[in-house]
Length: 140
Image (cartoon, rainbow, N blue to C red; front, top):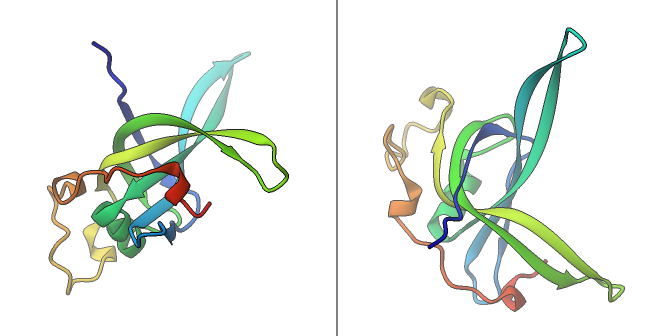
């Protein structure tokens, strides 16, 4: 048995980018920053780590609607490393977190009041599981 689970709490570095697979499924891509404070030579130092997050389906749509630069979120997901070929024919690798659950931690007043689908205990992973996809479907 093995476990592939990532838990992150951080802030978005930019608005999510929403793209669509060739068959029209939404994909949200964004980065969040996490910080760690360490003491080095008696001085506090803040280390920032950036994480690439990918969300699919309804969760991707929700990310596009409610997340923007600076939003504080909690993400649960799994780590995935994929291989692709760039335009010059070079093989590249990218490691990302595939979001399975996401909670917005900022004050709810910052979100549109007319949309009642976002609740305090909202778990987007309950709406849609990550759809199976072929890396060939991704336009990036």
